[in-house]
Image (cartoon, rainbow, N blue to C red; front, side, top):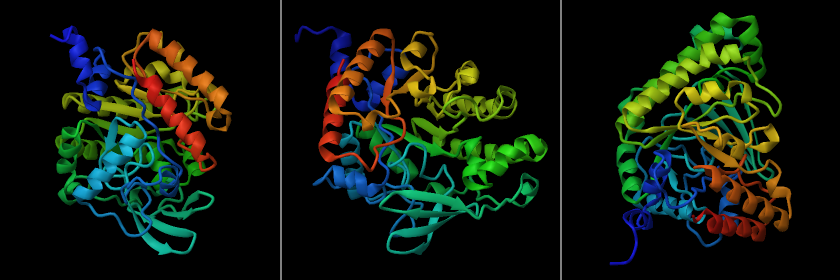
Length: 393
């Protein structure tokens, strides 16, 4: 015998997927998962990881050709695994363009196709009709020409069929491949609050409409909500482990909407999504930037299994949250200005964070907004290596 207990022996053999599921179930797990949001763009990912063959479809905004609704090739699958290993990521997000930024890309989100390409910029058109201008060096994007000028035009909005089998062609096969490779699989969804102003209506107009035209604004939210639930059902039916959605509900100081509006308009959709996922034995990961302390209890009560990014700059303290005995696993812990610090300060911060959080409960490390273009390769290597060391329990 090797002298290990059954628990120690099981932990030693855990795959990334087994480790994630054990953590989410409150069982003994092997390491603190490192779930990085990704990079500002795909060029940066390759620049910081020279010699590694990353997939061609990393970025959720297509650059050279439109992404198909189809499974990815065997070579692309292996390149995706190379990418996840390079940044210690235990999760593979399934779907074309779904691995660069948390919460974007794949069949559960509205799709972009190329409309115009220039030397340093391109224009994309969304399935909803909105357009997106993207520039590189420096990275910049801007959404415009939304299909709705006001919430009162909601009846004019045309959405694709979320039940179209062609939309999910190859998705089940990709999920199976990455699960068998030992990775926790996830799929992205539109947000219930963020989805409308990402793809359908100008952000400022949307926020004003919550006050000036609540009937049609709720109708728009509900329209996106029904689409999301149908898409979620299709994704879950094909075996994915987790659904990820972005619903940024706060600013650095406060909520973007009232607690009452969240409770009456958004919370029912979060509850419905979580109930659906849990019926399949799957999980829900909610991304919400900002200080959402006023509704934090409600968000956790919705059933979300993971919540990010828990940035102390926004009064969202991960270690304090861990001490509240909630069933929601906090994801985050990084500081908004972490990547602007020198290495000594970064090391001191990470060492303290892992030590304090590990003493209190189960958590997942995540940065607050992706790896910035300004980072130097030697600094990136230091952070990646240090996170790899600290993640071991």
